Image (cartoon, rainbow, N blue to C red; front, side):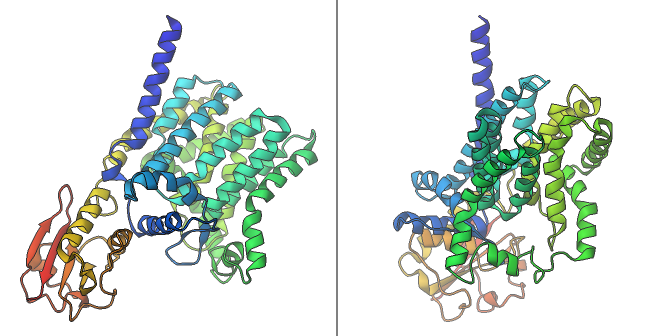
Length: 471
């Protein structure tokens, strides 16, 4: 009877986990030009199969990441015929695997807290939930970290080597994961027994993971990956890194940004979590469990050196280790207990807004509906039509995500600067026509004194498409 109850609980838990990661993705998953440009590159990779190092490229065209994200995502995208939701399903799938791997880690560690409580924490964790519902290269980092941790505690020397390999693969998804990789290296070297051997095995695995970047940069001067980041990125002198004022501001602000991130952007709870975390560090003092906070601190210190703002996904590599820290000290510190339940409560509060989000950044279905409407009107002569996004929260006025979706169907509009002498145009907006035609943008100059040929209201969204066709 007990075994049947246990199996029932496991099935229920897995169902909740899958639901939390997959539910309503077509409406709530973010889909902007980052995601649409990835789709175009994956389709090209699918149609012309080859091994390539080049993966996602940052909006400023400075950071070029490895192609591992594409190879993990491509099977799902191909199954769903290059619909954007395929990439979201891929991220959700690996998000589910991440939680399962972490449960195995905690089970192996025999942590002093019921696995059911740990599961609820991971299920409702805002950073893990958000990253599992948004198809973006940094969001695969927790998966490799979980796999690396499980390897490290399970398979002796081989596991240490594999942990270096898997943690090294996080750098393929985002360079700033390097700071957590360094922090975990400190944990590997924590005990004196066989310290040099452990460090060697870890670095051997890490070196194997990042060697493709190094070899590529060395054989293709001036390089594209690490050399480019070191020369032009946010961790270069030219990019403004190592500025004393910036370092100081980041050191002061990053811990609060991190706790706000953990709380799902609840600023009050974020402040409470920060204060309790500082008190917990002081309370635990030289406790063995304190080594886990080294990874979090390492991420903070690394991010303090960069130029520009510290975004949430820069902090994602520290999240799992913060959970390990409070769970590992659950019975030693009442503060850790309080932190666990505050994080569960904050996650539950944030979850409905996250899984039901429907705004200009999300709603894959609306983007596909707009694209299909454009195709239905311009048909086989789309190069004589153009599109612009005006009077809306979307600052990409050229409609990059719609152009990318059209490109997936081998359809191209007129060039992004050509809005005159055309057969027609599409203006995508949040505004009514009376306000939209007052928009000062040059793209609408030839149409502001005309009446739309047709107005299309996109269901379950605020988007309106104004279609003009010249007689």
